[in-house]
Image (cartoon, rainbow, N blue to C red; front, top):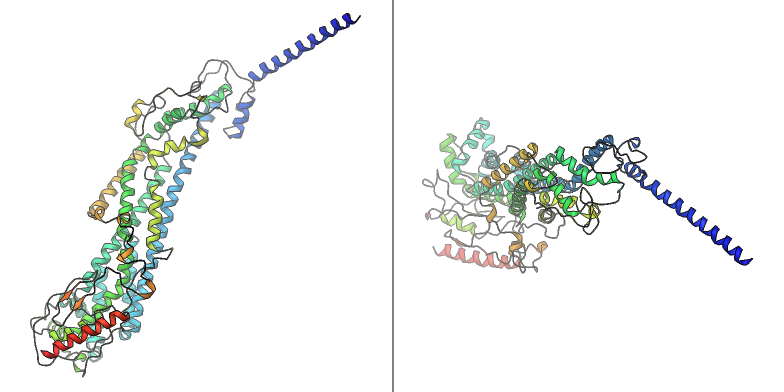
Length: 613
């Protein structure tokens, strides 16, 4: 009885087991011949209309790219959709990586221009305050010439066809009539009936009379050098932006698009939607597609090197900042020089312009009224030095006032928005993009897009590792590329390369000594900017520790010329019995305590020497 029951139960269990196995096999067979996963991936990646994907694999499918034996979930229409999708995805990925570089260039181009305009505005206000406070008689008419000067400098930095030298000399040409009629000979203009003719004559003869000494020429030369580097940097950044815009709009060749479809989507035709391409395989495809772009590598590296050098020339030692800040100093010294040489200037103007102006008012003063410093005897007036030389006692009388009329001008080193800080930030970020065009294929094949280890897609099958030869970057290397055939270089990128090489050559010709400028990193760790120590406080107006104090005596000789100045010529050796009195207008000295004592002692020594003579 019990044995019969057991036999019946075993028979029933075997029947149900067989039925379950049969159902499972049928389910597996159904899944193996379904394109459900392919339809899902097609929809999620927005490749194209979903109705193009068949429900089940087809056997008689005539494909152009994703050819393989056996059933396929792809059709001709799907291949067309795949080509459009992979082209869109690849270009989008390239733009994603290049956008950061383009944004870097654009953001710093605007930041540099804003900084330039800020420095120009500050320097203009600095000079205007000098004229308004110290030379009030000039300010009403001179301020418009100041505005014209800095407007020209602003246009120059923005790339306009403006000459710094012409702008500076035009400023001093326009300033000379005001100086002559307001400082050297006050009231002359009021007594003249042909004031405009006299002004025109004074403007025309300014560079021949040389009433301001060498200060205009030195100022023009210094501004042309530092502002030239800033201008060229701005133009270079604009060229970089144009270059990035051109590279973003290049087109992928047909061979490249086919290679991309084969790498990204052909595995889907077999239902393998999750498999990823092998690393070496991806590099070959991307390097073939970007072969023309990789040709930009050498001119781009040269371009970034020039950007580095231009930035260092402009802001490495606060060159541009200091040159703009020194405009006030140069103008002040030029005005003081003109007042000290008023006798010679008046005599020369009277001869050349034919205007009888008499002696300068300064000669009628009983004693010299000096309220300034920073007076130099740069170079004598060429047209009048032989006839009426300036007495050497007069030069020595003001030579002790050599210290600057205001605290030493230095940029704020703790300012987070200084030109130097901005330049350092720019160069640090730029360093990351020096090899951008050769590293782009690696970036596109990085991360989750590829598989480094076993089980990856080789374009034809799932393999443990890619066995093909991995080629390098550039057009020449693609001759051995097994995945993408590169027939001709991209004409648009070839044009970009040519323009960039030409621009690099122009910069090198414009600045032949650009590479000889000392880089920031070459400074020793114990030094700070401008040779000062860390104990020096900018707010105290202290001098740099390496600066030498210039020694001047009544004979006009000097030792230790300050930065940015050139020694003047020897003053005429004339010894009249009594030097004329000259009234010199200027701003009071604000040197520190130690300098004041040194200058006082030097003044006493010079006066004693003059008395003995």
